[in-house]
Structures are given as C-alpha cells and as structure tokens.
Image 1 (cartoon, rainbow, N blue to C red):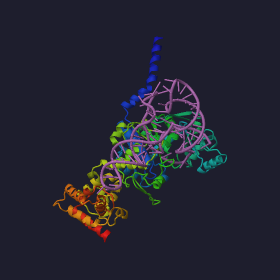
Image 2 (spheres, chains in turn purple, red):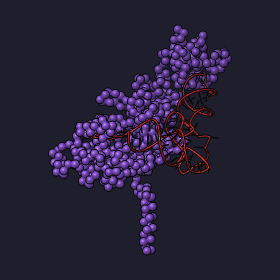
Image 3 (cartoon, rainbow, N blue to C red):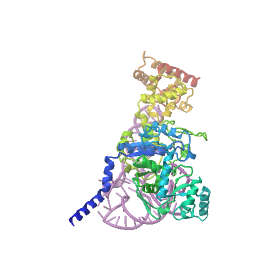
Image 4 (cartoon, rainbow, N blue to C red):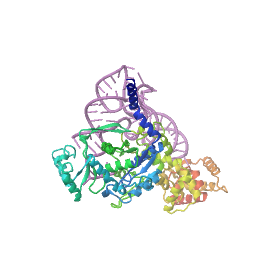
Amino acid sequence: MKIAKVQFFSMQKLCTFAPFLRKKRFMENMKPRVRFAPSPTGPLHIGGVRTALYNYLFAKKHGGTFLLRIEDTDQTRFVPGAEEYIIEAFQWLGLKFDEGVGIGGEFGPYKQSERKPMYKPYAEQLVRDGWAYYAFDTPEALDAKRKEAESQKKTFQYDASTRMSMVNSLTLSAEETKQRLESGEPYVVRFKYPENTDIHVHDLIRGEVVINSNLLDDKVLYKSDGMPTYHLANIVDDHTMQITHVIRGEEWLPSAPLHVMLYKAFGWEAPQFAHLPLLLKPDGNGKLSKRDGDRLGFPVFPLEWHDSKSGDISSGYRESGYLPDAVVNMLALLGWNPGTEQEIFTLDEMVDLFSLEKISKSGAKFSLDKAKWFNHEYIQMKSAQELAPYFAKILDEKGVSYTEDYLLKVIDLIKDRLNFLNDFWEQACYFFVAPTEYSAQDLKKRWKEGTGEKLRVIDQLLQQDPVFDMQAAHDRVMEHIKANEWNMGAVLNSLRIGLVGAARGPELFSMINVLGVEETHKRTEAVIAAVEG
RNA sequence: GCCGGGUUCGUCUAGUCGGCCUAGGACGUAAGAUUUUCAUUCUUAAAAUCAGGGGUUCGAAUCCCCUACCCGGUACCA
C-alpha cells in the first residue's frame, strides 16, 4: 500500500517534470544545429537572406552550428551559377556558415543531389511499415482527375477517400505491384495519412497548430525520376544532420503536419519548428518579388544577378551601394525587435539579444526609405579610410587621377551627404573634374552686375598667404565683404557656382582648402568667362 | 472553394502573464533652428477610438466568441 503510493507520486512527478527535463537536457548538452536550405533555382531572394540571418542569430546565440544545405532535388529547375551566387552572397553579407556546401563537415555531402542514393531505402522503409505506398498513376491520369473534379467545382485530393480507386500498391495485388516495379514502370511513393487524425504542430512563434489528416493529401515523397521530393529529403537530411531547430518561411507552415507525421513514421524525434512571417512588397500586399524591385527601384537580391537564359539583369544591394552590415541590420528588424528603442545593432549585439519569441507573427512590408536611412547611418559610422577603397574603384572607372591623401580629405567633406556608396560621384565629382556647365537657375539668383570683378578681388585675397591658411583666408574675405558692403550671399554663392557648377556642396572655405588656391583661381576665371563672356 | 496563418500611427514596431497606455520609439511627412548654398544635424508637430462587433472584468490593445479583410498553402516546386 505504502509502496504503491510512493510509486504513484514519483510517476506523477516524472510526468510533470518531463518537458522541463527535456528542455534542460537540450540547454545543457545539445547545442542547436540549424540549417539554411535554399534551392539553386536562381538568385537568393532577400527574404531568404532574412531567413538565413535568423537561423544564424539563433545558432550563434546558443553557441550552436549554422549550416548550408543545397536542396536541388528538382533537376528541372536547376539554374547554373545559383549555388555559387548563394555562397558569394553570404560572404559579402558576412554571415559565415560553420558547415555545409563549400565548407564541408562530418555530415556531408550537403547537396541533396549528391545524397541521392540515401533516400530510396527510407522511402521503401515507409512502404514496408505501412506508412507509404507505391503509386503508378500517370501525370495525365492525375490531371484528368483534377479537371474532372474542377468541373464539379470540387478539388481532387489523393487521400483516404480516393486512394482506393487509384492505381497503387494498395489497390493492386502484391504480385502485380512487384511486377510493375521490376518491369521499370515509373512510380512514385506517396505518404499514407492515417484517417481522420488530428496532427499537432508546435510552432515556436505561433504556438500550437492543429490540422485533421482528412484535409491533407497523400503527398509524393519519392518521384519517378528517382529523386525524393523536398518533404522526404528535408526530413531525412534534418534527421541525419542532427538538426535541432527548423527555422523557415511561413509558406512551409501548411506542410509542417506532413513533416511531423514523417518523423513519427520513422520513429525519429522531430526538431523544433519556427515559421517566420513573410516579407511583403512595399505597396499593396503579397510576397515581395523580383518584379517589385524592378518596378519600385530597389534591389530584391543581395548581389546583382545576370540571368543566362533571358539575359535580364537584376540589381543587387552590393552593386547599388549598400553596406552589408546595413543590409543585415535592416533585414533583422523587419520582423524582429528586441523590445528596446535601439535601431542600430552590430551583428554581435543582435546575436546577444536574439530570441525567437521576439519575432512577430505578421508579414513585414519592405521599406525603401528605411533601408536608405540604415545605409546612411552605416556610412557615417565608417571612417574615410574604410570608405576610400569603394570610392577609389569609382574614380578608377571614371578614369580620373587622385592621391590617397586628397581622396581622404574629400571623403571627410562629403561623407554626410551620402545615402549610398554610389552617391559618391554625384556628390564629389567637382573635386576631381572642373565644372563645364553652371546651373542657370542658381546663376540667375546669385550672379549680379559686377560679380565677376568682385570674384577676382576675392581670388586675390585667397592667394595672399604663402601657404594657404583656411581660417586666415576666411577672415580676410569676410572682412573685405563687410567693409565694402557687398551682398554676401550673392558673391560667395557665385564663387561656389564657379567651383561646383551649382549652389550646393560643403562649406566654401573647406572646399577651397581641399581644391587649392590655384584650382580655385582657374575655376574663378572660367566661370567669369562663361558668364560675362 | 477548402485548410492554415495574420490584423497597434502611411511603414517597421514597443506593448510578454489585463491596471504605470490620456498607446512609446524609429522611418517617412510638416514646421522651425543651424548652414552665406544644398545636404547633414538638432528641435517641435501632425499621425493608430489598438480591423469591426459582442462578451468576461471594478478595469482589455492585452482573455473568450463572431464577422470582415489580407496573406500563405492546396504540384512527381522548393
């Protein structure tokens, strides 16, 4: 009696604490292993980059592993160069994989096409255990079924209610099935859902999602071309690669029940799931697509992409003058927020603060303005030395000559007017090439009768120091203007127009300081000649 | 159609277990200041009756139900 009571209590205690124990064991022993698993069907979409980023942040936060797996089970959609593109994109973004394609690791190969022989035995195992069956229905036959259902305003579903009227190992005799298989007849393997069963998916972001198996159709697991579908491959790979958390886009939520059932069918412990909200287009609704980028003038891809088939070029963040850190920061905040009022984070800070619970459930609209602001902020944080290489490249392309020292001075002067690295030439060209045209509008506003003569006087004043002294020159010119009661705005802006070509640019004397008095003299004469003949 | 998910300023969001929210921040917008110019920067302002409607409660953006709208899925694509 007494013993029984003790047993009862200890059992209850065990039940109560089981989830806690599991969690504790995970925290202590199991470092998370997460994967980013794109398919090489084209350039990596920015939404994919964000998915990868969240995987990365999660892995690093818990000291785990972040790996890259290439999901190329659909050979008809393979695009040459896509895999290389993906790897290069992450290099640029500064997100390093610990393991996977291009790096290696003890769970390889990491490309599904190279794992091809692995999958068939697993598919067969499911058939043997009654969790799946061979199906011989031709694509045409299935198509006909769907059309027929459609004409009656229904949808055909290959499921418990229909599978017994189709051509498969459930309806065929064992002998005939064997014969068809041996004769090389094309077949697929379909998952056999148990009838009328509620399937629970626990999602780390959304909580419990329940769906009844009657609403699901018997998904193809193994295709007639000898390749697994995504569903089979991702379960087999995630299990054999010991993935602990599957963090992927919301578009996968509807197939999550299948995946949960597959783990059950194999008798494997399922990883934890987290389905991320989608990245939406800035106007209207819907998934952000390549077309939106072209239409609204912002990149949808990290790197520029040249489509070898169509010849189309899609712009990339890198080529558009974004800094990788800015892109990462901006992307991280599109759907995640640590709950503070901080906006700018280093990667390490994000790793430190990251948690899946802080990811929002609803889709986020991409904003070009916010992206621009982030980039501006990141450019300001960089020193002239750090920025110089980007601009040196632009100058080299323009074919102008310059010295390192001169470039650094120019950068210091115009840095805060840059939103993108590519703005450099527009904001700084006059430091390298004298203006050949002058803004008619600005001239009209500033250039008065006798301005040319006044400019010559100022030019003389500027040249008085044996070695140009910015402060002294400034004081001298200002004093002269005041003493003679000149219209300061008119005179100085006219000089500015001569130097820049328009009424814009940094502080006048700083500009003269960088340009030099000799160049200033030349440009002064040039503008007088142009305006007054 | 069916199934699933979502819904706080124009946009990204804060708001974890209901009271400190007369809903906070950022981007963008407007005004002002600084700048002899333009950009930057700074200050201030406008901007969400928390999708709508019912409950529960002394009290709800926060809990429950219904409706609407949006998104995703519905392939031998991933």
